[in-house]
Length: 333
Ligand SMILES: CC(C)(COP(=O)(O)OP(=O)(O)OC[C@H]1O[C@@H](n2cnc3c(N)ncnc32)[C@H](O)[C@@H]1OP(=O)(O)O)[C@@H](O)C(=O)NCCC(=O)NCCS
Image 1 (cartoon, rainbow, N blue to C red):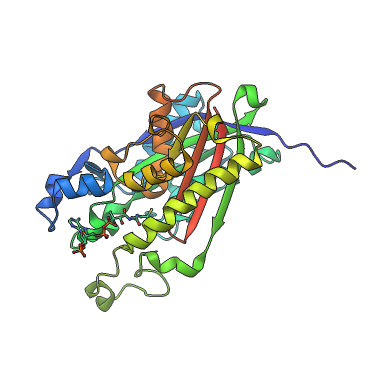
Image 2 (cartoon, rainbow, N blue to C red):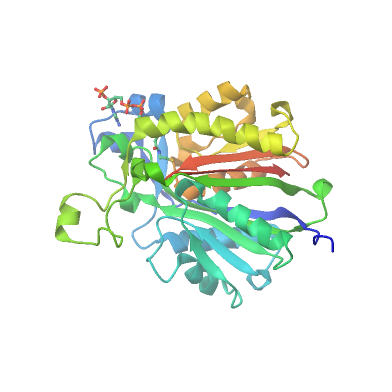
């Protein structure tokens, strides 16, 4: 008996939502001992968005989802599954994805959250691809969304400059093949031995909410920035090369790289080592900072709407983050 044939899968619509409120480097100068010049030089960031007091992660998702549905020419009732990649869910349970399912008027379809920090969206993309490829379902909404500013310590100048809020969405459906656009390759990996490098230490079952936990500011993210920086560069280089190798392609074949927007210097170092010109790399961290799972889908949506992505382009998605986790995808647009 021959193995069942897998279907090709492509992105048929994208959307994003960024809250209106801006937090600039000059605002941060008033909050911690830092300055615009240092932040721009060390990170490339100028400002980030901050969710309104009455907005939770699902609210950002709902806007991004509606935009992606419109872009795909679909109704919410066409969806067969919703995956929300986030580490800042509205509540531990019910999942943010279930709130989204109800709010957008989807049918009684599977909806769940996926926690892989900055790698979450590509993890979601990879899982959605295999579900559709195997013929289980047709249309999957994958969201990457965070309200990180609620978990950012605005007394820690080493981390508070980095993070912002936002949501990005992609809808995946079957494709007729490479000419029609398709996801050529996805890869996911993890190494839990260094999870403490990027951690939100309090609020979970290990260290539940308590006065002591709050006094130690463990309800905020803790990052070892310098250590993460070094690991990120070499990992990104390997991820891109390995994905090309699996598809029998070369670095020169890449038209656009959409990297996780963690730090412009990390991206520039990786690009230099890969010998990929910066003109091929899409960067929007100057406007939004690092929105963890949301950076890549926001960037895909912006790049697509700005005409930065052209039909037939080979696009490399690559990310590295908390867990530690890392992931990549190669897409024929
Ligand atoms: C955080 C990060 C921007 C720091 O940049 P860096 O060049 O590595 O800077 P360092 O941590 O080596 O600090 C250099 C100096 O600047 C100081 N500094 C740190 N934050 C500062 C700030 N906001 N403003 C001014 N000075 C600052 C440090 O105290 C240090 O001073 P010292 O030399 O007197 O000790 C960078 O390491 C980074 O982006 N890392 C990855 C971030 C990350 O983990 N993101 C989430 C993962 S997806």
